[in-house]
Figure (cartoon, protein in one colour):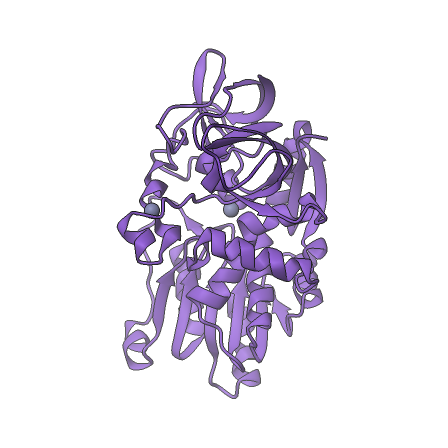
Length: 372
Ligand SMILES: [Zn+2]
Ligand SMILES: [Zn+2]
C-alpha cells in the first residue's frame, strides 16, 4: 500500500513528508486510516535527538485517532469501521508489571526506541529501500498505519476524532499525572508548570479531582490566558514569579503538588518546583529531559524536614486502556472541554508549520489531519 508519512532520517532536524510503503496487518494487528494526530513535544524530541538510542529513520507521532479499515487474523478487540484512539504504550497483560496493575510500564515499552511491530519485532513501513520505525509503535504522522490491536481503544463514532485524538497522550498523561501520580485531593493547592496539551489536561484533571486552588506557570501570555480559561485561579510567567502569590494565597503553606509539564525539563526548573512545595508536597516530573541532564541542585534540608517527594510520571501512571476508556467516557458526557485545547489544525504536508507554531508557543495543541 502506498501511503504518505512524516519521517525523520539520520542526520536530519526536520520531518520529511514522503511516500511510504505500508505492509498489510499480520496476526493481531489492525490497519488504521489516521484522521487526526496531535503534535506532542515528545515528537519534537525526535528531531532534536533528545532520546538517545532512538532509531532513525522513524515515522513520528504517538497521539492520534482514526478508523479501522482492515484487521489481521485473530483480532478480537476491534473490527472494520470502528473508530479508535491510539494508546502509545501497548500492554501485554502478562509481564510482571502488567500483572501487578502497572500496564503503563509494560515490558513491551522497551521496544519503543526501535518502533517495529510489537508482535514479531519486524517493520511494517519502508521508504527509500529502508525499514522505518513507527514511534511508540504508532507513527501517527501518516495517512495510515498498522498497529497491534492492543495499541488502539475503540471510541464512540459520534465523537470528533480531531479532538479525542488528544486523549491518547495529552489526556492520559496530563490528567493521570494530576489524579494518579500527584494524587490531587479535595482542597489541595496544585501548580502546573507548562500549559501545552499535557499541562492543560493536568490542570483540568486537578480541577476535576477537587483541588481548592490550581495555578499555572507559562512564559507565553496566550497560554496563561488559556490556563485561566480552563479554570486555573491564576497564572504566572515563571515559577519564581508564582512563589510570592502562592505564599499569600496559601497563608504560607505553599503547594501540595507541582506538576512539571514543560516541553523540556532541566535541573533548574526542578529545583524551582521543589521550592514551591509545602509539607509533604509532591513534585511530579512529566516533561522529558535531555539524556545528558544529570544535575539538580535543591534544598535537601527542605526535602527531609518537610517530607517533600519527587515522582516521575509515564503515561499518567495508569493503564492506557483504563485511562483512555475513562477519559473517553468523561469527554462523551461533556466533562472535558477538548475543543479549547485544539488551537490549530494542519494537513500532513504542513507539519512544519505545526512544529514552528509549537516551538513558538502559539498552540496549546496543534492537530494534523493526515487523511484529509
Ligand atoms: Zn506525547
Ligand atoms: Zn506487559
